[in-house]
View 1 (cartoon, one colour):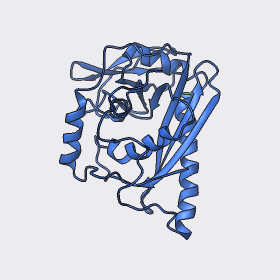
View 2 (view 1 turned 30 degrees about the horizontal axis):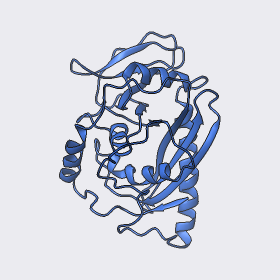
View 3 (view 1 turned 90 degrees about the horizontal axis):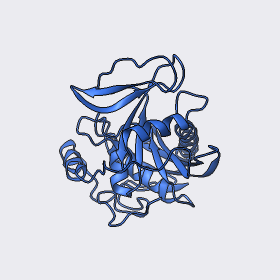
View 4 (view 1 turned 180 degrees about the horizontal axis):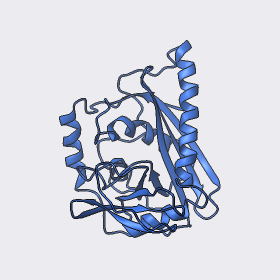
Length: 260
C-alpha cells in the first residue's frame, strides 16, 4: 500500500479548485473512439473515506477486458486533500487515485471511474480530470444522475436514454440489467459516448455495476479498514504536508501520454 501526502500547491479553496478545472477542461479529448470493448486491459478506480480519522484510501484494479479476470491491483492511502464540495470531489480523490495507478505493475488501459466525466456542472468531473492528468482513456459510470435529467430507458438490458443538461446530452442512462435501475455513463477523455456505453455493458455481465467498480470498491474499503486500524494505534506515517503523489504532478498534464 502506497502512502500519499497532500501535494505541494494543492488547491485549498473552492475558487482555486474551480480555477484548476477551468484551466484543464480545454484539454479533454473528445474526438477519439477509444479502445474496443472486450479487449486489452480495463482498470477500475474507487475511493473510500474515514472522515473522523482524516483518511482516504484509493484502489486500482486491472481486469482483462475479455475474461474480466483480475490482472493486477494496487492501493494507496493518505490524508483527505479537500473538503466535501459537490462538483469538486475530484480534489478529494485525485492524489490517492494517481498513487494507486502509479503503483500498478502494468499499464492500466481504459480507466473506469465510479463517478462522472462530462456529466458535471463544469463538464469536468473526476473521469475527465483523471484522463487529462494521465493521458489515459477514461469513462465515468455513476450510480445516480447527479443534477441532470433523463427519461427512463426501455426495460431490456442495453437500452439507453440521453442524460440531459437542458437540451445538451452530457451522458446516457444505460440499462445494464433487464428492468433494473440504469447506470449513468459519461465520457471522460479519449473515448466516445457510444463506446463508453459498450464498455459498460461488457463490464456488467451479471450485475448492475461494472466489475471494475465492484472490485475496486471492495479493495479500497479493505485498504481503508487496514489503514484506520493502523492509524488508531500509530500515525502510520501519513503526514498532511507535501510529499508523494504517485510520481506525477497532479496539477499538470504530462507531455506525451502512453497510449494503450
